[in-house]
Length: 268
Image 1 (cartoon, rainbow, N blue to C red):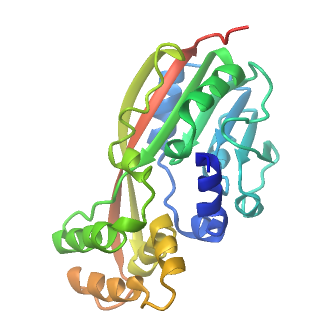
Image 2: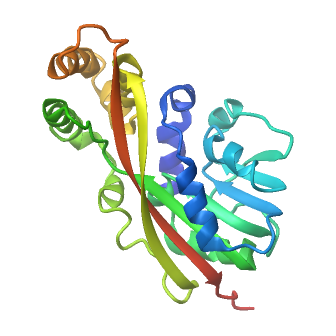
Image 3: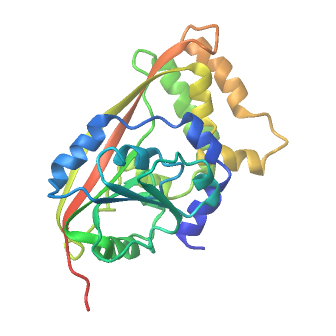
């Protein structure tokens, strides 16, 4: 089974959870990417593995048109509609975009699922000579001021759900080290980091955890076992000294960005 098929299967059933609970990327992320890109024109952006359109809707503010693709029809059904966004069901390695038509190609929290050599060739095919590829992800979140909550979440991630994460999750934990396109694909490759912070209720945070692929795999494999998030929420409230799941806490995710430009021409 190829990586795109695995990606499709894991996230097909989680579209509404992604739309409800995943944190929004900060404006500093897009500003960092656009500074690196230094584009002469902003006609077309291509968002790959768009999911419910979280990135596409932001790109629509910066670009005349956005093409947003995802292999999951269920995800696309939940996508936010805007006049200058076109959604298509397509894979990362075969985007359906025209040759040399894209100014900026983005991938949010999905690069680790791709067949990277095939994807980088596809990026070179669709990007303008002055175009840019930007792929980013975020690691496990931090709870500033709540060390007990931090330890509790790490136990959930590794101790309970550890065996149910895909092997490709390791690439996220390593901040995509080893995933960089080589000089045969792009002449310039750089990295950057920005924080993503969100104040959210305990209930909303637990909702976010319910969108984890490992949690959903665990529940599918062990429907007879208690839901681990039920006890986790009780323990999290205690760790934060809270009594109601509508109480707010600050959550911070570190975003790592992989950016590349000056795509190499494909062999004829």
